[in-house]
Length: 73
View 1: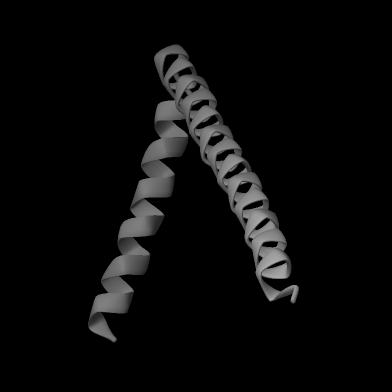
View 2: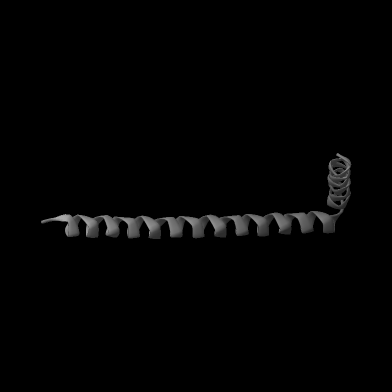
């Protein structure tokens, strides 16, 4: 329980510090840049996921076709 309290205190201090930093021009630029990079990273992950999903669906389709061909008498 003590560790949870320290975690909550740490998160709270982090939010306060980020809010204070965001009040400055450099802080705003930093968080704007961080936001852009985070969004770019998330989009890259999503794109990779969609590509891999398409590859797996294609492979599954090929496997189903092969199974159908092999099961014909």
